[in-house]
Length: 393
Image 1 (cartoon, rainbow, N blue to C red):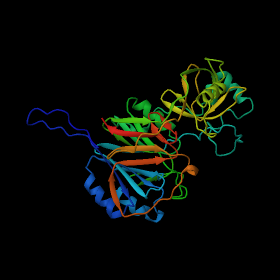
Image 2 (image 1 turned 90 degrees about the horizontal axis):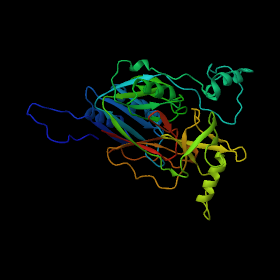
Image 3 (image 1 turned 180 degrees about the vertical axis):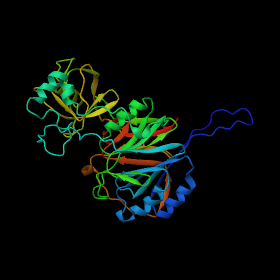
């Protein structure tokens, strides 16, 4: 897809070249098809991002990836949509710089599980495990200090001296340090990307992140784009309550609201009771809390104590405005030609369908998915069925 020049250019010697993005999906791809497509798509300044669905036959991976490794490119794997043929999605930016960084965050917080400290854990992961250490940290730094695992990243060396107005990223499951670094170095640059599909049974790596001819198991690969992109997010969620103010929180535990009786779990239950009066409601419905521009999954609640446990790494802060959200509407329609659409699938055990095989074909537009979510801005969206649409401004 590309911008169209608005208005006529004055003067016979004036030429203006438009920034463009080419996005296509190759279904049941062959090496010859990939080589022909690349021959028609590239320029000397272009940068390409590609994703292979994990349903592709492992014996064909090297022959499909080889032509893509000979150009300026980044690549990885995405989850196939139910019933979708094996596919190769290719997005080519006509001006961009590819990069790779080993930066990766700590494992996600596990709520309600006791884990004995052991060898192989980083100092950040062991913070507060010594007897008396946790209380000392809490007194000195407060609950936020005890919860905080690792220092914020302010620099990505691989991007020193690079000029960029936006970023397209392919990450492992722990992109927080990379997002922090990009925000510190390029605070105004939009960021969009996919948390790539795990590949332990496909390539023997937890994640497979490809930068030109090099392959990594962790970190992030990306394209620094010399143009702004517009990103539209559709979570498919609607408000269940009005805005509420956090009065007390500890880490990922929401303890108290300023409004009403202050009990977060009882506030949520009352809103659900009012919504579902006389109607059937799903027992295992997923509910979310809106925090600024993020949607965070609610894991559990305690009606007597009031605390709600949230699926988030960053600690909640007193004074934050939040809002309960639920799904009560259908998502927007499928992507149109030349769109780049990123989707969050439900967890793998909920996705049904078997990949089918057909004759090789190419279609405009790209729709890539992962049950690990997608990156937008400085966070990761894990809301099932949510999607992000990319266009060029």
